[in-house]
Length: 64
Image 1 (tube, rainbow, N blue to C red):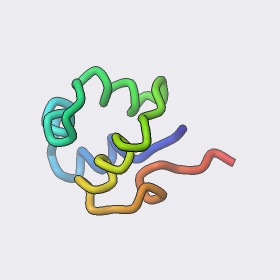
Image 2: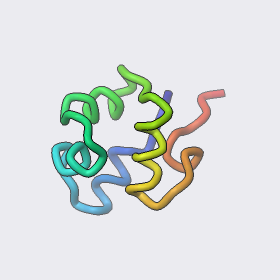
Image 3: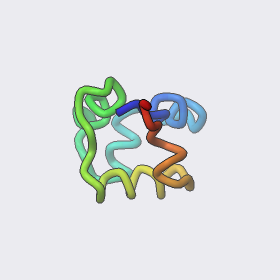
């Protein structure tokens, strides 16, 4: 699943570790999500959207 996490994180000048701490996951999880190697669970997707003050659809892109 494509996402805008790298872009959104960069806009805020956050490292992967900063974002991971804010949503209570590991830095490795953020790295895997950003690279598209791991699709987050729904609760993690909601936390990501909330920390960026966006909807899930604005963070994660439909690949169709």
